[in-house]
Amino acid sequence: MKKHIPNTITCCNLISGCVATVFALFGIPEMALLFIILGAVFDFFDGMTARVLGVSSPIGKELDSLADDVTFGVAPASILFWFLGIIDYPSFLEGWRNVIPFLAYIIAAFSALRLAKFNLDTRQTTSFIGLPTPANALFWGSLIVGLGTQMMFWAYSLPLLLIGIMVSSWLLIAEIPMFALKFKHWGIKGNEIKYGFVIFSAIALIGGIAYGIVKENIHICYLPFSIIILAYIAVSIATQKK
Image 1 (cartoon, rainbow, N blue to C red):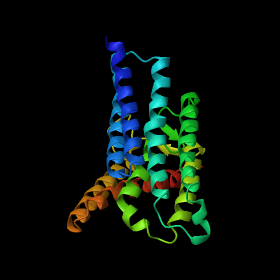
Image 2 (cartoon, rainbow, N blue to C red; image 1 turned 90 degrees about the vertical axis):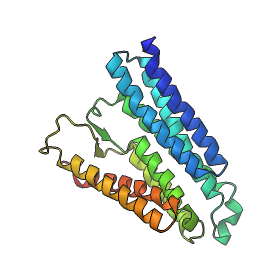
Image 3 (cartoon, rainbow, N blue to C red; image 1 turned 180 degrees about the vertical axis):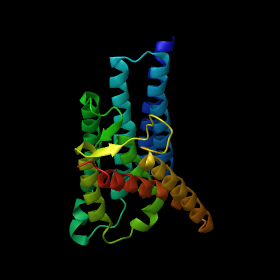
């Protein structure tokens, strides 16, 4: 019985991604983001459960990648697909409104490439090479939920989003070392970056929630997640070993 527990949790991740995709396509990005986050929780516990129970298997590894591509690739891409269909377009691109949104699914394709690469890359045991798919999904979901109302009418939203899609897709497979919040010990020495990032993240989240409450705008509360992911990328690049 216990050998089926990790795969069951992985399937919960997959179902969360499917539900998130449906909410995204129906134009409810807030719920889509919540199910992406729920999928991330399941993704965290399936691997942990497999290690604790000692029931890791090749099937579980493949199933995990499939679930991750749906939850952290297709679902955020669907949020962008919906959003690219409703924002303002320059007049000369208005005729392409029914085509351009499909570019969002480049993220799903590169997420699949990143996950396949991760499965074969033995270097990624204590850190990552390239942007993890959950981080990429969280960035896009929180950005659209947090700033979508304002971005909808910005004249430069379309080019920024298209550039962002290309850059984030490249980051998924880029040979850029990125730290993981995995601790070999709990001492400060050697963990300065990790502890500093955790503290920054906590401050950003608390500040974002407080600001959202003051402004009576719950959507703003999600925006710090995007800021945290951008900080994660910046710190990872800045602290690369030469």
